[in-house]
Length: 31
Image (cartoon, rainbow, N blue to C red; front, side, top):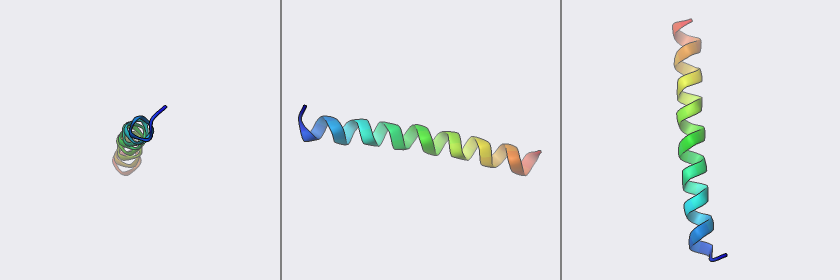
């Protein structure tokens, strides 16, 4: 695999993790 592929995968993973963290954070604050 090329380095670019890994960079893309990392960026996607970070985006997903950030979205989940934000959702959990909002849920905790709202709850």
